[in-house]
Amino acid sequence: MKTLFNSLLVAFTLTVVTCSASWAESNKPIGRPKNVAAFQSGMYTTAEGKLRIALDKQTGGSVVIRLTNQAGTDLFVEQVGQRQQTARLLLDISALPDGLYQVVITNGVETTKQALTLATTRQTIAVSRLVAFN
Image (cartoon, rainbow, N blue to C red):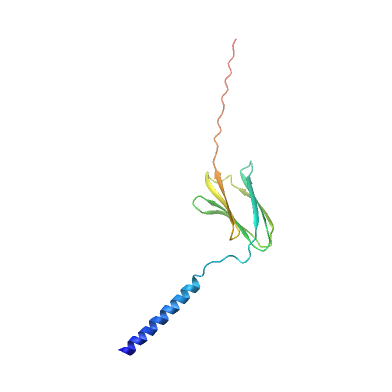
């Protein structure tokens, strides 16, 4: 009985050690990316209903530009590579429905978020009256 108990104790100990070691290996914390590129960005809308995004960055790291809707679904994703220093994008947002959107630019460490609201303006027709006396 004592031999059986010792055997089960050794087997249980080895199982716990193996499982904990494999769990620790698979759940490593995600650290800072090795190459991080500093960046500057600017964006504005045009009269034609397009969004212009300008990005200047350092070489050596990549930057990701995303346009997401209110539900968090990516509508546009562009990765600017490590060797590129500038990116100029023109997005046609005139076909998107009204709502709240977000432009997210990130290099893995720093994140820039800009809110974008699309709303259709209703034009009112001004009625002018002409009154004439004879």
